[in-house]
Image 1 (spheres, rainbow, N blue to C red):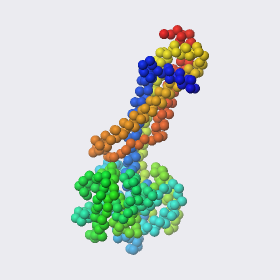
Image 2 (image 1 turned 45 degrees about the vertical axis):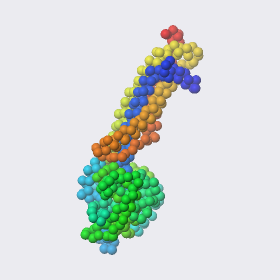
Image 3 (image 1 turned 90 degrees about the vertical axis):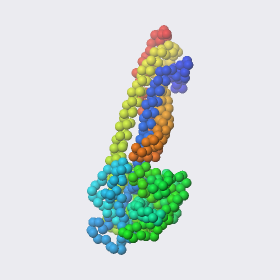
Length: 458
């Protein structure tokens, strides 16, 4: 085999260059085709991954909400906290979400009605639910979450509505990707009265662009029905860029205790936030959770809500577009790979004398066939590897251009490219397979050449 490889390399060489022109053109065609495919996919996958980050920074992958009192109309007076949560799903927020240009699919009217009117949980009830769900191996984290919007007076004089997201961050067992992206130690949020805010909100509060080293404080005073609660001074320890301005421009992320203090929700949480190993398998996991909670007589009136209920159509469409892109660009690779057929046929004509000498030296015809098959695989492998590297490098450069120059025209900002190993391996295998198919006929013809005729050729 090594002997055949040496012969293949010698046949590919020219007198002046490492490879002759036919080999160079074939390899160049593969490089360009693979580069365009990789360039498109790494940018596309990066933006899809950023959209996942945005959604998971607003909604748990699975959430358990309380509907207690909605179905029977009864609720004890002492079971209500002083704060009555306002839903993020109210119709008044539609303009903000739509202005962000990320269109989430509609869920059912029944889900919408319940989500808008969902009550809060007592922490004791959530602890019982967490205990019941612990045996499920598909779950990675179960934490009480506060996700509410309230009216605040800030810096003593100004007033505005802020969206408060309060979560537990111990051992990074949370569902918010933005925290891990901007804070090296997520546990810093567990320090009293520390928060991270969106870049848009930072500009609104301080009339300045956020710096790498954030050293600012803000004083918030929660107000409800003309009643003000004790003001809280908060330290800003990070600034995140969610990428959807209209959704993030009033968002504050903090620890659960700080959120409870801000919103006067001591002993309560909005819901149970659940993370799963496979986010796109959230639906069957949510059904399993419903079955478990439905069999517990101590747990009543809960809604299990999984993120695909608002985003399944969006990501199904994105996946369809991605598959179409792959099919179209793979077709161009197939056309490019067929150049190998023509170039190998020309190479055989140019190398007839060398082939005749090899046959006269006793090399079997099967070895001649394998030699030209090896040549096609060298071209395919070399073209694929160089094309992948060029595509990734071009992806980094072009992505920077998109994020900087076209930021005002894109619905998602600050996306980074994503290189998927399975895609890279799949492209290499596909190109090598196509090259092998297209080299079959010229390799067979080379093995069938007549020794006398080849030695007499010029």
